[in-house]
Image 1 (cartoon, rainbow, N blue to C red):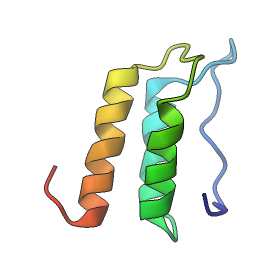
Image 2 (image 1 turned 90 degrees about the horizontal axis):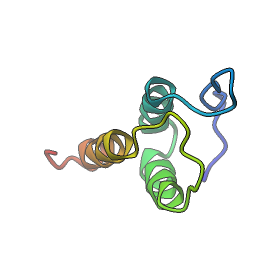
Image 3 (image 1 turned 90 degrees about the vertical axis):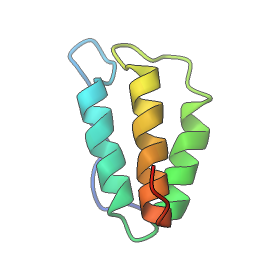
Image 4 (image 1 turned 60 degrees about the vertical axis):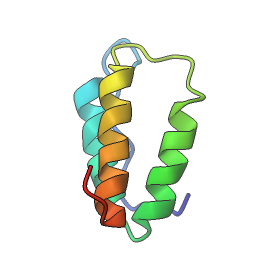
Amino acid sequence: MTHLQQSPPARLAHGSWSTASELEFIERLARSNDPLVNLRGYIAGLAKRTRLGQLDFNEVTRFANAKLAQVRGVAP
């Protein structure tokens, strides 16, 4: 993954990510210098995550895949 100048999503008080903050992070990846690489890496990493906390895995996965399709120029 290329270096992003933005910070990762903020954690909730109990140490997990929120769905909203994760979606914001995905938006930033889609606007990064190399969105294809960053989004593909994010999606690959998402499948390996074991601590989801408050994260809606299905919503985040759908959103990340839709953003990847958008960046690739393919209608989601």
